[in-house]
Image 1 (tube, rainbow, N blue to C red):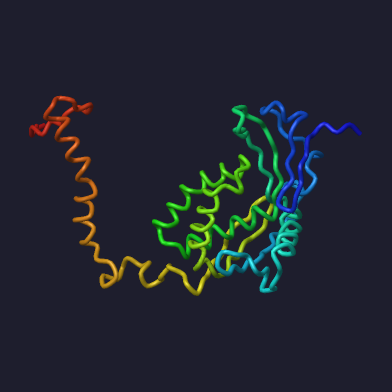
Image 2 (image 1 turned 90 degrees about the horizontal axis):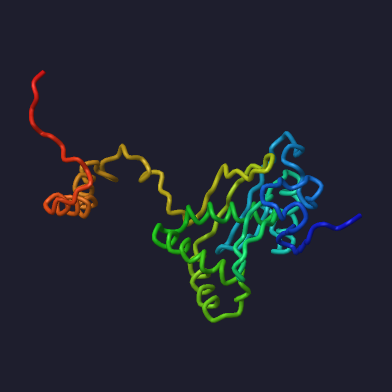
Length: 245
């Protein structure tokens, strides 16, 4: 059998390039996939799995404590059975060209989905947003082979610091190519059910929003006033003249 694809495989994924994939319009052939079942052929019955984390590190599946290697192998098995983790994308190579590749990362997809959900529950907004911005730079460093650079080591320390409270469990439903989050909990969750309701005035007074709205919109108001005074407004000025029918 002629090998028309270039493949690389490790515990995290397998990649496919070449062959019919050289034309990004072509749909990957089903026989190309080596790890995952086709979502159409995956079990009709959904399967639930609970992932446990401690300080950002996955430590358990369905309450069973596992080492990192064994845990990822188990997730690969679960994800492959349900057709999870097929990724078709066009990449930007360091040398300046684009390439089309298809990846299978069943366990990694489940793990990333669960970890992200736990971060949403346990990280404050500013830290989470800043970490998201740094993620692009971090991904570039790794993708471009800059693993041992001082910058990556500094970023590693930042990420490790953010994970101190990323502890808890995430429940997912695995079904025909999807890892769907259906539950999450943490002993250090920043979600407060008593704060989440807007009906309690001792938690959140609706009248507080009025001043916030005025301040939040002030820069836009000033900009509009300046533009109007200088005759630079792009919008047609409203006609406030009272007209009787």
